[in-house]
Length: 141
Length: 268
Image 1: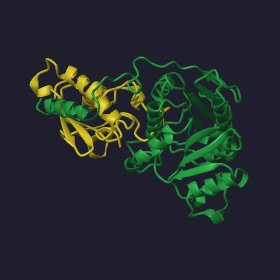
Image 2 (image 1 turned 90 degrees about the vertical axis):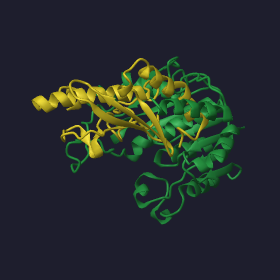
Image 3 (image 1 turned 30 degrees about the vertical axis):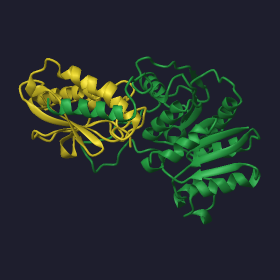
Image 4 (image 1 turned 180 degrees about the vertical axis):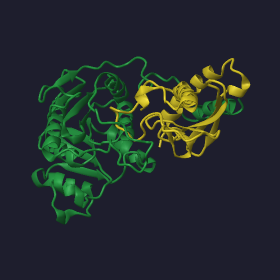
């Protein structure tokens, strides 16, 4: 419960998340702007990223329990299977299912735009891995 | 005479409930607990195998009534996050003097925090670390740090988990971070501290900390020694996205403003 059916969730969206997306979109090439789609009790952010040479289409889902439940990002563009890719081309970003101590998601500090930036970083690593076979970030090993 | 709102009557929550309800200053308890007592609970709980299949809320209410027949005990058999029960839960929080959070999942802790902040009630939270190597007791008071402020601060500054990350490359493998259950003695240490601190809070005492960490074992890379407690006074973070001021319209105006904003971004 929360995001779209409680006052607190709606307020978070209106005052924190939407302004963050609007700032992200400001002045950006129209092809790379974030589009927000409402679906049931969740929101989906659709966008393209180009970390190096290739353009990827992605979706970040803000589930009903967001922001206490971390956002979930998947790449719609077909990828080669790599060690940090979960089922459905979902990115392994926050140690899903982990405790407060080990989770990298911080609902008190991060907005959905942080998830987009994390996806950008993941894709940059993916491109390096694609060329070299090495995942460049040590903490992800 | 006080009214206490507690969520959770698991192995730790039951100890807190038992100890808090023995205090004559407590007049009424509202307990939110959705679960049914199961055979795997018996080892760490107050009740025997004959109680398996009964609601934990009913067992807990029966337990405290044994020694406090005068205590007014109300049970809400529901998940704290159940959207259909929020009216009842909010009313109970509004009528209480203090909250006790004894849940072990993050969304429920954040929701408990939101309820307590909405109604400006003090509350406490107990957390036992995996394997019973230690535990936390946190205290929250109106206008001070929220659970988001505390969790965010601790996430960056205190490490209590050095377990290896799960191996997502091999989904069939045993997940290394699966919680290692704590033993009953370790649970009782944290829950007893939680109850003692809560009773102090109920009496108006300032514990002098936001978060108390009690290591119960020496663990390489985590705790240099056992039984040396750490106290943290964590301030409210002005940048916290959980408790920060979000100036927005209310009611229908909020819905309209949100619809307009989403429509704008839907066409980007």
